[in-house]
Amino acid sequence: MATPANLSHPSRADLTLTAVLFALSDPERLAIVRQLRSGPLDMADCSLSIPDMPKSTKSHLMKVLREAGVVRNEANGRGRRLTLRSEDLDARFPGLLGAILDAPAS
Amino acid sequence: MATPANLSHPSRADLTLTAVLFALSDPERLAIVRQLRSGPLDMADCSLSIPDMPKSTKSHLMKVLREAGVVRNEANGRGRRLTLRSEDLDARFPGLLGAILDAPAS
DNA sequence: GCCACGGTTCGATTTTAGTTGAACCATTGG
DNA sequence: CCAATGGTTCAACTAAAATCGAACCGTGGC
Image (cartoon, rainbow over all chains, first blue to last red):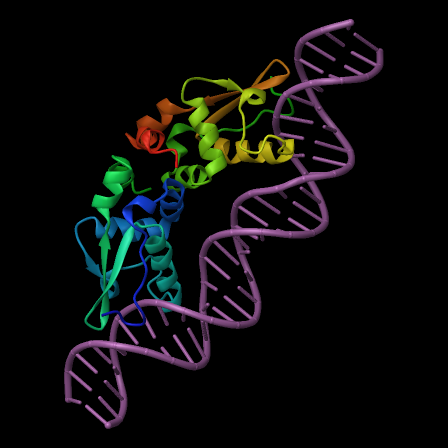
């Protein structure tokens, strides 16, 4: 199951535009999402701009993305598998995720 | 010219995705932008969810939108004319504005 | 010219978000 | 079973954003 307690994810119907926009308005979080575009990734494998970021900070970034419904975070062995919730996002906000991910990386 | 000093607007090339997303991640600001979709509006005419909001607060909302490059704010008589910078946004982030404005109002 | 109107700006305060160490928890490897 | 790995959670702190009154500024009406 999960490492410590199962993490809660909002259902598709509960996604709100403003929460999604907010989650993606941080460069670090956006960079994470960009990495997930090509498929799920183990959390340990997703690289950050600050390589020696404390794990609690990294975990917090993931929490914001998860609570906004952008990312699914499930246990996988002793680590965590991160998945972009593209289908849910596309269903509720058509074209949004694509437009954001296609935008210049800046 | 302007009412008090000319307001500065970022040029198209200086727009950043994260600043735009942040500006639109607030429900009040997003509501303003939705009103501007059908054309420019005098600031006094754009309604807010809180009708008796202090003018300094309203002005601050506009500032965030302006500094992110979402809205142009120019003097017009003794008031202010607000314009959505759709062309600039579309040029730099194709599809983004449309996807956001087409999303459910929530 | 003067005053009311619509807005911006400043500064102080409150609110919200980010950061991080420490404690804790499952899982896997040995 | 034990220790290391990979992550979450909590609490305390710092940083950033929102709020709003007061002072101020152009413009237009009179």
